[in-house]
Image 1 (cartoon, rainbow, N blue to C red):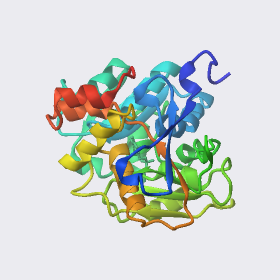
Image 2 (cartoon, helix red, strand yellow):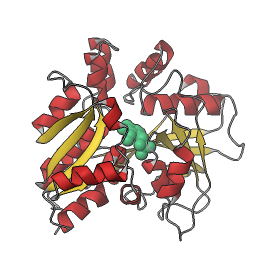
Image 3 (cartoon, helix red, strand yellow):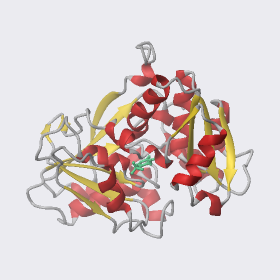
Image 4 (cartoon, rainbow, N blue to C red):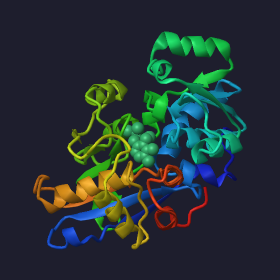
Length: 323
Ligand SMILES: Cc1ncc(COP(=O)(O)O)c(C=O)c1O
């Protein structure tokens, strides 16, 4: 048995919430948020799905653990640390930083969950997808399986294929959307075997990355019907992890409805979707939209740590979930 059925963590529950937002009141489009709850902030949303097959592979191949890559406030690193600890695997995180900060809440979460952290300066970090570089890290730790940044490999994307994100409580959605960064989540949705063939996929990008379309193409399975998809990159704003007071106000307003998003991924993408719908920028055939809440609420602690949000925002935006 690879996963113990007693580990609640591996049995994510689908939960739906309809978005009520003033800008949508005159519009006939429904937006439903699809949550994948695990009872653990760090491994909810897309994290649990993208890690499913790579970690299964590590266990099957009797590896002692995994190594992976992420920024200093990475949701992916936090998820890998927690998931590996639950499964009895070791984990190493290569962090994009000159020096590991002892007070960084994300890195501390990773350490508390057994992850060994190693700093990679910006120059070395650029090599994170380079096969020779990975091979050199692999040679130093042959018993550890490499997982790419964001968990966005073909195996990572495969973890999304069995979930029906289109099946909202009021009927099938025509469009399924999510925040997009390294592309594995969207790639999994495009190749999903659980959703109707005519459900379209929209990736709302939160990073400036002109190679993203191409990287998603590379994660798609060759011999399988794929659904119609598109990326929209007009709402990245000043760049990855940058947000303005308007976006923060949007996140606060949703938190008051017990709908928790953060301004780097889910909040930025959902604000983009509301703008697209309110301004009739989507096809008129789209009447019901499912927005996959990809998690990432652990990142709110990092925003507070960097003084990008106040203590009151930290309490408001992070809701009541345990880490
Ligand atoms: C909260 C959150 N949402 C969305 C994404 C984007 O997912 P992907 O990198 O698979 O495009 C990430 C990054 O993994 C994330 O942490």
